[in-house]
Length: 329
Image (cartoon, rainbow, N blue to C red; front, side, top):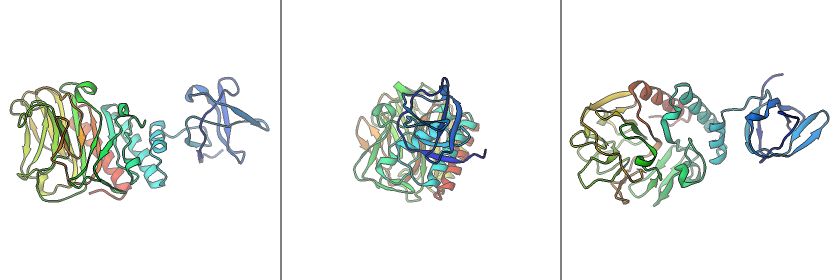
């Protein structure tokens, strides 16, 4: 029997024949045959057609194959939640998840924002936990951002709440943030993402990234105390377009990257991990968005620290994702 993909658009399942389940589509083709029921969850109901059982409803609606193997459930859950209907976008998401898992870095993320689908609805979901809840770190948008197939343009007037507070969700001296900018423009007072819960000009409790700040530098803070802020004034600032990654993997090992290239590092001692939520598109300065960016965001992540090899693996996965979508820079 050859494998083929079938979309199951139903909403619950129920016990079939002992511990093994069989499902056929409306044309009598097997979707799965004698599949271990432990692979499925929820309550379900069942009908019968000839010698095969038919699942009449199913909690894990989405793409399944005739051979009984499901596509990645994390990818499917996001596709369903974000209502992604474009086949190229679906395949890009599935490949992204597979690549991150194959590189053993999937668990390094608390939030992955693919910024796909072209609407405020589709772009708000967190790939790691695509529930429509603050607790799942789905985005909440303010202002009038522009959503398109290439990402989100905050345009200096909008930003996104993540509801993710580093001191609660992450670990001291084990953090990263990343931002994929599709815009090459002039230096300015813009922050691509971050939070500062210390005082003005006090970076001891700031986790933030400025792709090309007013002085022309690529700047990042990872609760940098008292003088471990990284500011790179050449190389990555030749253009403000690209994938920027900032990572702290110990109290005295903080590095910044553009694409997969390490641009600078700091051995300065760390301060205190922030106790307010991270914003995307702006800096959260004591619960106020400041320095809102005018650079389009096509991808962003928040999570645990990444070493150089893991950064390279992340970049490769994201570059493949963006290339598939035709929006890589």
